[in-house]
Amino acid sequence: MRCIYYLSPTLKSTHQISDDLHSIGVDDWFLHIHSKDESGLVKEHLHSSNYFETLDFIREGFIGAGIGFVAGLVFAGLIGMTDPFAVSIPWYAFAAIVFLVTCFGAWVGGLTGVMNENKKIAHFHDDIKAGKYLVLIYAKEKQVKKVQEMMTNKHPEAQLAAIDPHFLNPFADLQMVRA
Image 1 (spheres, rainbow, N blue to C red):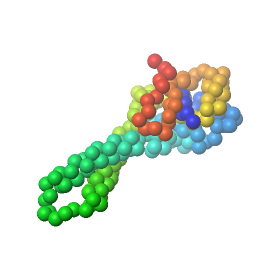
Image 2: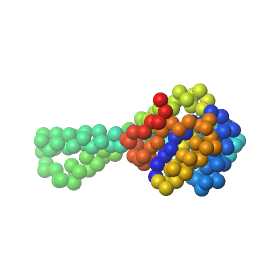
Image 3: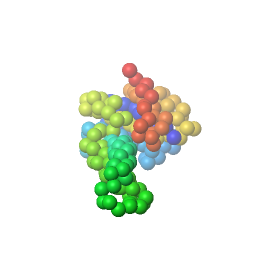
Image 4: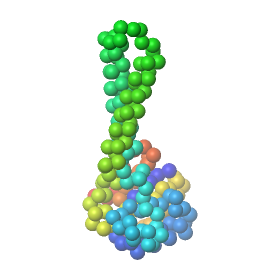
């Protein structure tokens, strides 16, 4: 499954795109719109993008977990080498230390990500701020060509902006189409 990003200039055009995508078999669950005009999307009964798409907490959470894991290993190693309690520490205590510090890192990373715009959406920040609508279409491999043909034929005003071949991977880069 791929995520295809289109920039639409107006709310009316975005609504027509949504209707045309429904007519070729794209369900609402696979169509999200990111805009600064959330009230317009609600009035038009269009699905706005969700927190997974707009915020970067998944990506930052993974980064935090990785940093926490390394910090946990270092901390457990220091405890093992210095023997601060003068008692033999069982292996599962070291595993618990690594686990807890990893979880703490993931938590802090997730909180950091809630404060940041999604790295994939950030490419379109200026366009969205200027009033355009970012249409995210999640299409199965067999639907991609049909979606692109329909958009080219019926909606030349909408600009193909990017394709995300691995939309589940928060670290994957977008294939930018526009200049």
